[in-house]
Image (cartoon, rainbow, N blue to C red; front, side, top):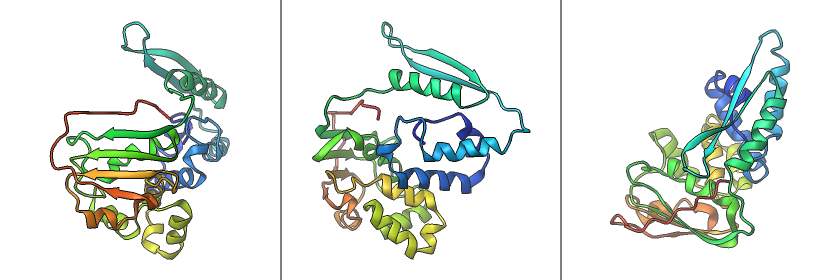
Length: 245
């Protein structure tokens, strides 16, 4: 989506599963590198067009920007924006970019992410480690994911089967699989997830799941450069990236 909220909450929120799947898919195909932190993008343009078609329904948006207080570290409201159209959202997004994002002067060669085993039990959730760091990693770099709690791919059997069948591959490969598979076309959110979980061949991913075998992980050809390492015990050292991209 680039920047969340505003009319996304209206049209995607009440649009049901079809709207959720399609919006996720459009964003993934367009490319997160061209969307993250950017208020105006093709998906937002679609929502703006939807707003124009609902002029008989009065809508007023109240948007808040929340960030850490520099002195106390507590979460505080840094901005409040009220309006019935894009202008209020654009101003809120501009402030959020300054308050909620940490921008790096240069990309990182190596990133290590630790996934709390109590929260991350599948790659469906655990692959946030990939798409939340992907923009910050240099070409030819490496992402190491320590995931002692991960023991499956999807949160349910249907998604798990789709991930096992198609794997985390580059966008062109996933789009080709989409053409060939009726089941994948029926779940565009799964297709979007497969794209988000790829490095697009730019960098190496070393995935260290506690509950998956080497054959299971290796069969996915994750990002085309996956290296498997199994974690058997909970590590005491936690290194997290705190860059929000």
